[in-house]
Image (cartoon, rainbow, N blue to C red; front, side, top):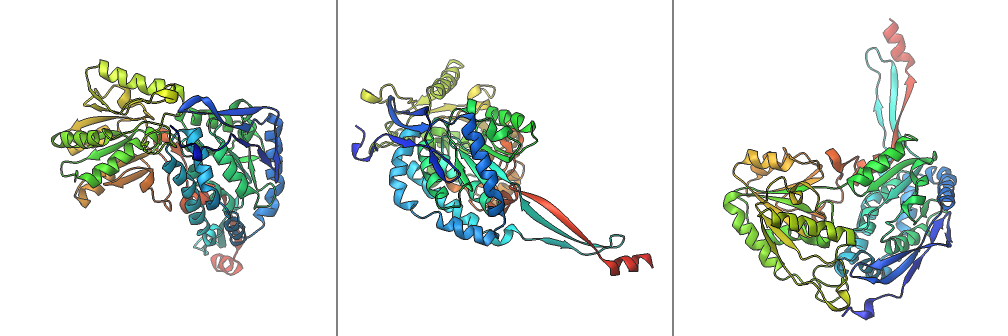
Length: 498
């Protein structure tokens, strides 16, 4: 049974607009993916007018916030984290229930928010750093290249790691001088709203606003003429819709979309317990529902049996259950639709004749109706199967053998996606050679996955995995415009004329 001592009473959240919490007539019911009959809480359901009010509040706050120095903004933002750690246990309990992931992952979700926030603040001195171009032959001007904030930014986050993902862009947008509207995911808005509102309450009114509601009422967060930037993390299909809507007002976009990451095990890869533990986490964390999880494992043919046996040994210890239950190692998928999709991938692979290995026992009792799927390994599937070509976003992984390094690179790049990848080898030279040929935005060596992401480094995808970068100084620049100011140098002009 679920640890009832950790289950919070139904959570309720409102909108937060212009420094004031706002209730709504309609609400979003948030259900527990492990027990879909149970309501975790209710979130405010915004109308189009609420959205317009949030944009207006952010616009009104922009002049005052942007007029501060980056250091002044950073000081206020540092103070705004007060109390975050004190509420982490309660936030994690709510997040676990609304997303479905295990308690530890939900707890880390909030911790990563704080880590990313503080790393962004360390960039304050670089925000307004300028480059000066001295006069040159035929160019009698001194040009200063600097930056200015865009204005009102909308940040839209997904259900899987909503709090941590929010901090990949929110502190960078604020530090750059923008005001922000945060849109948590409609199926899991509670913990994100609670955390974002607590931060917003410590900032000037209107600097940070929070809107929850159905997508049908949210178009103003993207199409409104006063929204200068939209940062969206989600599916490829969602990214296309966001980009189409933003095009109507030529609003800038950063899109961090899905992946089909390849983990490439070369012939000399070290395949011991340490590396297998890393691979296992990279595949099955959050029940496989992370964009940068490994989605395909390409293994030199001579090492396939070792990888399969290592993963199988770990999957044999899988305990499917409620995320708050002691001993649970894997929770349910977030939605019934995703459960149906993942089950169809496994069934199609089995029907094709591929070797399919499934593990764990589906929960019974009050969890019998949950969105649980037994984790699976698909060995040597046809490369054209959907379990290979599509993003599974669930606990199933194809293992594909290769014979040569060139073949491995070709297979890794033969996909619509370009988010992340990894190379597993004992040779630094081979890691650099192969990693440098992978067409993706981030490459690990002898590791893979969200827990190993360098939170200081720019992150984002190539091809259909998105555009733009989050984190680091590039993440700040994504919320700025570049401006050049040229001063005529009379002395240089006189020298040129003579």
